[in-house]
Length: 193
Length: 446
Image (cartoon, rainbow over all chains, first blue to last red; front, side, top):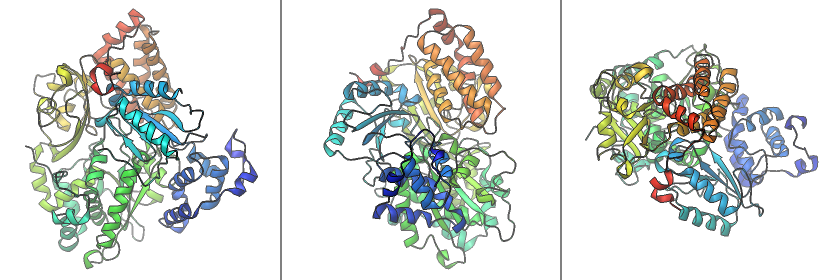
């Protein structure tokens, strides 16, 4: 499959060969593809990219996108142009837990900037950076529909709302001790409403 | 207490499960429609109800349905727009999370009216956990025979599918949503053709907001005329309002259209007044896109009449002294809020969310963000206010989709009503962030 479409990212043929969905991811992806008419499989690209991102370390490498293209029998560029459009797809490596702090209007009005500054200081990283141990990435994001429970952050599938510094402390502690990757597709979401 | 039709069972434990939902009268509209009404009769009731699209545009739903082309042998689709992303809006999330079967019931009844055999709920990617809740509810509905082949023994069959997004405000625009559903970038399409003629995969399609579809349930159950009795004039029925910002009781409220804005903000039944005894400064009444109004104009129209929560009353005075009901994202700001900084967060948002197809929007939103950043840095000049005005006026009406307007209107309104704040910053060459969110929000005091 063509590798030039992935821009500056290096495409590694050996890495690509080694990539494969695990059993659960494969079942989930096949289930999604079955929802669409036979000639409309391209519609599955977004949900399948979510599975790929969760399965292949929290981001979409050129090899991962190539794998999805082959899986859906579409061109690699059709995958790349979608992956590069939507903000939830990471085209660069991220930490195991990405703390996505909302900063738009209502969240700003209720203290989002303080939460961002607090996390920056606590983890010794700036917005967009990842901790040296690869555990946390901090990312400021736009409105997540949690305006009435501001300030808030999203990590994987979970919304953490009405944030305080104490809540941030215990959240970071918890994630650190568990040490695993958090993905949007996780089933153990926490709903604080 | 106003009448509630959508979240009236909020207090019922486990109302999100099919058994409890059914025990409280759930799925009655499906029984009534499929067994006693023709699809045309269902559409007629929706027309009579006066229901207007609850996503923001307020277009009459029955009329939208009647535009749907019905060529022989071509599938038709109903697509639910659950891409709720307008800053300040979280009502659909609330409805889907707590009352998933209300949406599914509405989808079945509406799909029947439109003759759709496959329907989709497109939900924003960040709401992944709500997607799980809905998937579970859909499975329940299939198992109980509310979805699938020959529903209730009739010859009507329907498959309902979920589709997840991946972070893009623009996918709330209906043609961008359809592009995304087809597995592409969320670039809005040039209209015409409208989705009613050529929508999903080129087939006739109706796209409706979550709350709009849920409202079909009480309309069919009680009749369109009953629904139309609620509200004022052309603003019929109830509306979910998501209230946030500097109020004592943020949250989602269902209210009868026609409630005075003052009562909504200050009564204990709703927002409970401004936090920490502060004064009201301004309100964005219908999501980030609609014009911000200062306290005196949100409580009373320019003519001195009490402002009501209706499409017409909020729109009274046009954009000079009025605003819009929009999506119902009601953002309240107290006396210490910097309107300039709030506008900066909005403009940064629109710049981030512009799909990039049209130059006025792609370049204009970024330019406006840069200028507002100068105000925040204290390096702006007085002439930058005029420049901002000039840029926003050149975006409006010059783009494929309404994101251009959505980005331009907040800038215009902030300058129209709060120009002095911009000029003060430019004169002082300093931005004092007096928004004091730390002091105001006890939660985050260091």
